[in-house]
Image (cartoon, rainbow, N blue to C red; front, side, top):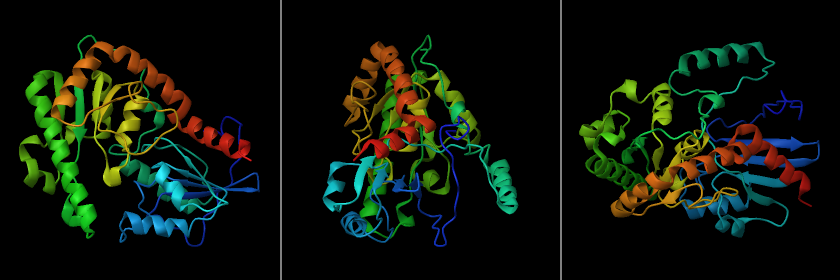
Length: 316
């Protein structure tokens, strides 16, 4: 996007030891500064290590001038070195953007994957963007998924998934009871969710990306829970992009200029969830406007990257 606007020039180079499993990107800026962009969930560089071990690993790896971390909190600075500067990257979500690919084989592969996946997952950023215009009747949205604890070996990760599943199911059940037809919520269907909470599973056609985008436009208040490794999930950024009012579990990680009370309300249990939603019913218009401005200044892909480049260039 920035290259199309004539702001930067990009040359893509695929490293020899490229690891597709981890969303970590190295960038050289102006042939001088070395930057790393990290959009991992939490402190999760090595799957077989717990959080403390991962932080020790991080302290001895990833040399650069600037390290932009999606899941950023002050604790991370304890594991830094004197050369590397660690800064919060901000919110991110899964989007598709057309771009230049010099290798013909890569072009074909990418085009095929886009054709196959586009209806389910790959969406251009502008399709998330909605104006901050409230609907006449206030309704609440929470479409989510569960995580099978058996799919991970680490005990800490198993316990984390069990807590996530319990919290998400509780949110849906409470809101169904309290708000009735003004609440749209349920679980993405898979074999684990069917066993865990079959009555809350939704048909596939209601959980596609296109269906989700349509639902976003019809619901002014959206519920967010923490993701894996306590991350601020993609859903939060998708709500921001759509200029929705948000109620969320307390965020663990920091994003630039994101303010509790201004861009979202926090809840810690069923009672505070219901009270927060009732409060948002009266003040949703202001938060929707706040999030419209926040998206355009801090979350929209070109703005997010431009902000990081300015930080790197302005930081001595």
